[in-house]
Image (cartoon, rainbow, N blue to C red; front, side, top):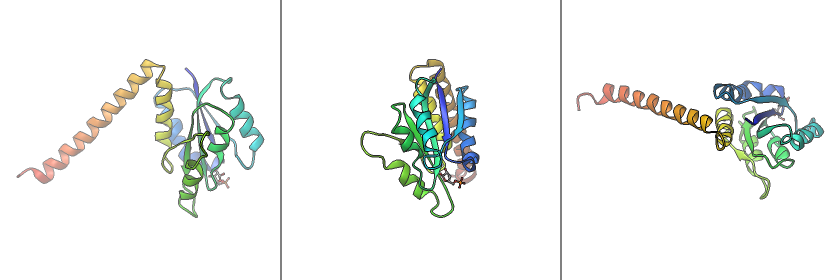
Length: 166
Ligand code: RP5
């Protein structure tokens, strides 16, 4: 199976990024985690993206806050799919990172998830790898069905509490 790369702009991003790593672990998807910054270590970020395909990666996840150019900078240097996670920071609550990540020029796509959306970023990566892996696709289907069951059970409990006498 191809690997997923999780790249973050700073080690201060790790608390959110760990949720992506945990999700990939749940699905048994191999991954690496790196700190490369579009601004502080641009040469290393570029080299990583340029070599990612030949180094066995299938999807890159890029997490960054503030002026979040990391996902775009990686996408500029690879045609592998790049999933961007805009991270919440103090001053602008993550809207700065969201807009920096999502507003890519035509031709260089970044699939952007919600602010701090690390779990969905990992799930998107799993879905991409599952295009050519039926066992992985089956695991996604099973997890989706289990999630549905959980919500139906919650609905049943709420309905029983409030609608019992109707
Ligand atoms: C971004 O700047 C990083 O992704 C991080 O979210 C933010 C702040 O970085 P630190 O100053 O905490 O290293 O590039």
